[in-house]
Image (cartoon, rainbow over all chains, first blue to last red; front, side):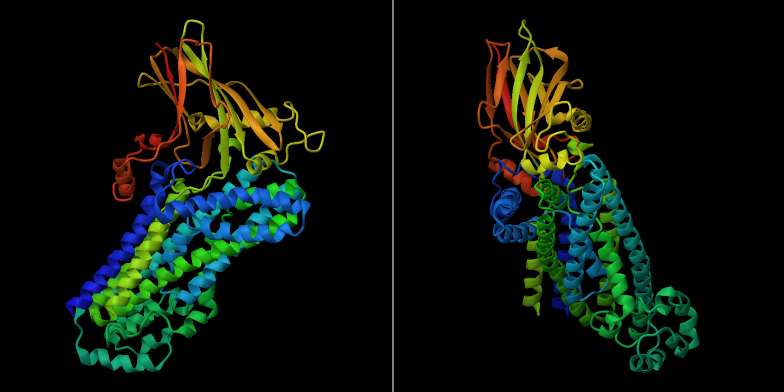
Length: 376
Length: 212
């Protein structure tokens, strides 16, 4: 038992350390990140950094080449993909937010992959729409485009904060409930009275009424809110039923069926839309450069493929985050009450992290790319 | 189980340390700088010529009306030049000067214009010192602490002196970090710098003017 506990603690520590270093390093980047061109950083990092810069700079060469020779377009697309892959390793692109979201929401890695791709696709499409409307149709200046991007950015960050706050609220309650469960030491016969019934049914609200009245009075109020009735966070109430019997009635959150439900996807989509709204400055510049070469559609192709590359990187990181959480969950399962509590704590932590990330982005401390340094 | 967990932890930590934030420059500038001296050997300012990369040049030119396709006159670019210098104020023109170690302040730029040649924009501007200064060792650094903009000395004669024949100008590329600096870099995550820190300067493009 002590061993599994140690492992659980290590995992939890790892997740938190990883997440916090993510924030810290992002905010300290302006001071810490060395001069890119002149400072060959050691190891993988430096290599990735140099590669992405090289790919970005060669984009213009290939766009020019595509003007002369249509076949160069394929090379351009290849470079765009690679640039996307390397570029997404840097800050931005919602890696941290998506990963935190997956951890907080007990999402599966499969869903993480899908969400990563959707958010990258939205990001590309937003860049294309902004340039198509502002530059192609309206002939707006860089200043106006920069301003538009900034407005979209702020909207995106506000949405991230809101989604985070909602998660903190939902998960915070889950944590408090788990806390109470642990301290209450309810008589076992009472617990078993409700457990088999709960198990045999799918997780829905009305099961509350099958509870002993005492339990109802205590927990019913907490659960009879919109999450339950909307099935969106059915697992919250679900937990509420199930840890009477084992303290960890299920492996990881909601039943797969509940996840696949419309509510589940909608909730995931809200998060990726919030993250993906913010277009990548690189894509905007590439699109406008292509437009200036009368190759707007080639630019559109390159942008979409860039997004594909970005998605690949984000998906890998999201998968790792979701897997780590799953493993932590499995370990926690062996530790009955405290393990459950720890998992709830992780969820609250991850949800809080989304709020912090969103707030930092909003406050401009983590701005990863700025278009207005020269153009207002 | 234990092993698998450790494996996951390792991968997670590795991936997140790899994702340690690195800004991505989207603007590349190669620059020439001329250090201006008055007749009495006092430094009065710096004349910069910053050439942007082709993609950023195209971006900046978006929506600027011009009479002839592929050509922009200085007049057509005047409003963009104005926007450039106005925006740069917030970033201290990415130019930091010290006279014998003492920080100097710059006034608003004068005499600025944009030039469009070979599909790239060059921003010319003169940055006058608020108070002209004399020093045995004048140190000028050009860099973006947030590295959103990548500054690089131009290949041919990037630094020149105007009106100070007795002085000697040398320039230094950002150096390889020493082991101590390397170690400090590695700790930035756990021991962040305070905002007033000038640590980023070690990665700056340095110009040194020595006068007798």
